[in-house]
Length: 386
Image 1 (tube, rainbow, N blue to C red):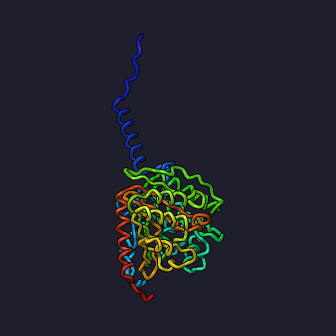
Image 2: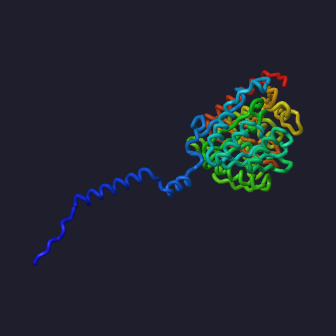
């Protein structure tokens, strides 16, 4: 006796599978799993910092900015236009993505204060070291107070010698330094110079200095431990130093003693006898020595103005009715000395200062052009009523 298996209805099974697949696809298209929503929310950032605009300045690794060509006499607050120096610096602050470290003697620019607060709000780590003697100025105290209210780390030096540096490091790669305090007067009235240097190596050294200042170490309490004190940018070499720990005076005197053809200087305060005597020696051996000095300091205590005049150095008081604030020496055709370092004993022995020595013929020509502008004003002084 034989048996037969029941026939399977394959067409019905296939139809059922198709119906189930359609239902499943419909559910997937109309439902978002909770796990995906949670993951996306937890990994999202409030702002895509990589989309921040690049600062609208040239891409060269070394740029010189001066205020001189944009000064207006007399200065009237309602007629002010931010000079290129200030505009470029603000652009870098506004484009900062990770860090801003500022060490400056004086700071009162309201737009800069707002830019620092905005940077802090978008997640940039902002730190400011300054000379707290300037808190007697209402504009300074207002700006510093606004930073403190936002819990931005701010450290005053709390001592009689000056915290006199004028530096900023942005995103660990851009260094700003020169004679410019971040103030209304230094921006719109006084002759100043500032260098913008793109160099992670130099930035590292300036952050080490900022770390010391922000930890409360000022003056002789600091250590001379900046890495990469000599860097190369293309055909340029730059060395940098900080006082009072790096022996800047001896370096400046040695450079002056090595001058062969010309020595041109612009000095806000000049009382250091060692540097003055080095210039006299240069003059006596046939080097062309010439300079402009801030007129308010030509007859001050310890001024070398008279000594240089007696040695027949071509030196003249400046003609800016406000302040000629440079601290610069140009030597021969290849060396520029500049920074916050006034040529004084205080700058060498007590103040927090910084100084650059740059070997670059192009930069020499740019500083000599600035000297010509300052000298032209010295030869034709400008009177101001404010």
